[in-house]
Each structure stands twice: as structure tokens, then as C-alpha cells.
Image 1 (cartoon, rainbow, N blue to C red):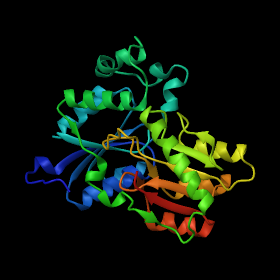
Image 2 (cartoon, rainbow, N blue to C red):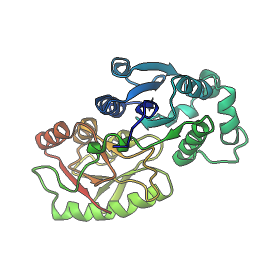
Image 3 (cartoon, rainbow, N blue to C red):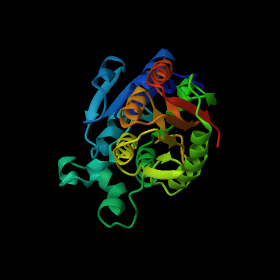
Image 4 (tube, helix red, strand yellow):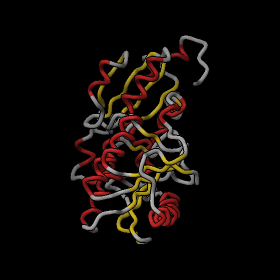
Amino acid sequence: MPNATTTNEMKIGLIAGWGNFPVRVAESLVAQGYEVTCVAVKGHADPILKDICQSYREFGMGRMGSQVRYLRKAGIEQATMAGKIFKTVIFEPFFLLRHFPDLTFWRHFFPVFLTRTRDRKDDTLLTTVTELYASGGIMFAPATDFAPDLLIGEGVLTKRKPTESQLKDIDFGWTLAREMGRMDIGQSVVIKHQAALAIEAIEGTDECIARAGQLCKAGGFTVVKTAKPQQDMRFDVPTVGTGTIETIYKAGGKVLAIEAGRTIMLDQEETIALANKRGISIIARKD
């Protein structure tokens, strides 16, 4: 846990996206005595954060100048990000009109959205966000610094162990997932008999798994999810939970392989118990 010796250091901003991850981080921060001011991304964040954080306000994705001013007014100098942002929204019709971007947004994202001199990879977009906040005097720290217990340890986590064939699929998929991560395409691949059934891109892990189920009606496949070789732990850290297990089960998968020490598992006991109930193996390994 980061040292906090002054009142100001006990204040922190939480940029909350979709899912349970921001909720778990908020609960951990409050338990440690932090005063949490939450910037809730509109259409993403769980409203339960209102009851956990000391301050809470929803903002459209384009209102980044307003977000920074809101945090600075609360005396915030450090913040953390948690939760998924659905990247597909930036390709919807009239995206920029619907999210009312402010001048601060345009000052930083103009090269991305209008001049097209920068790409739209996840790392590009999220690094631009951290630079925008830094220009307003707010520095980001990894959410896992405040909730390290969410990072999963190494080993076979379930009663059912992968078979020899599935271990070969994990090895095959691991190399492929790392390469996809290096190119900042996605974090997950789905493998059967050392053939790639589906590779995650903008749609996200759950949709990738569901597509594999449609392509492989026989099921029995392996899902491999790793961090990027260049993973910035401040954002986009691989995350799994009960929802991941249910998606794998419904699609017909049998194995989930994740990277130990660099993957967040939400509700670990419940997730492992569900995997045991569904007959799914979970293995966490080092690179």
C-alpha cells in the first residue's frame, strides 16, 4: 500500500468504468482510510459507487476538462483507473456529438480523432488520457497498488487440471496471445488442438469466447488471456471473474489460462467455486 502521511495524500480520485473492478477498488481504498472522489464514466460505472465513495459524479467520456476540474476542486493530486471502457462506442455514428467533448479533450485528442496522425490502439488512447490528467496536476497510479490481493497467484486453481492436450493448447495460445498483446490488438485467444479459433480485438474477451463457441460446436476449447509484454499496470490490466467463467461454460470451453501476478481475478473464491461447479480448469502461470 502506498505511504500516506498527510491529509492530502489520503485523498484519491477513482476513474470508474464498467464492471465490478471499480467497486472492489473503491471498497479497498475506503477500508484503507482514503477519501475517494469518483469520476463515473457515463453509461459504464456501477451506481453502487455512490454509496461507497465520499464524492461521486457522472461525466460523459468527452468531458475530460470537467473531470479534471472536479477532482482538483476536491484537492485530488493522485488518481487511479479501474473498469472497462467499451471502445466500440468510438465507432458509433455521431460519437463525438453525443459525448460533447470539451476544449481540454480536443487539445489532447485532436491528433487521434481528426488529423488521424496517431493510431487508436488501446495504449495510445489510454496514455493520452493519463497525459491529459497529468497536464492538470493529477498523476495516475495502478489500481493494483491499492488492491494487490486482486492479482492472482501461480498454480492450478481448480480441482480439475488441464489434460496433456490442453497444456499443449495453453503453450500454443500463450505465444499467440503475447504476440497479439505486443501489437496491442487484444489480450485473449481461444485455442483447440493447437489451432486458433478466435482472437480478441475491439469486441472484448466475452464476445471473443462466444464467437469461438459458435465456430466450434464440439466445445472443449481453451481460453488463454495474458498481459501485454509492455503492460502498463495503470490501465487495461487483464481481468477475469464469474462472468468470464459463465461465458466459457455457455460457449462450451473447458480451460482458462491466465498470467499469474499480472491478472486481476474478481471475487476469487466465488470464481474458482463456479469453475469447479462448471467443470472448468483455471491455471495461472508465469510467462
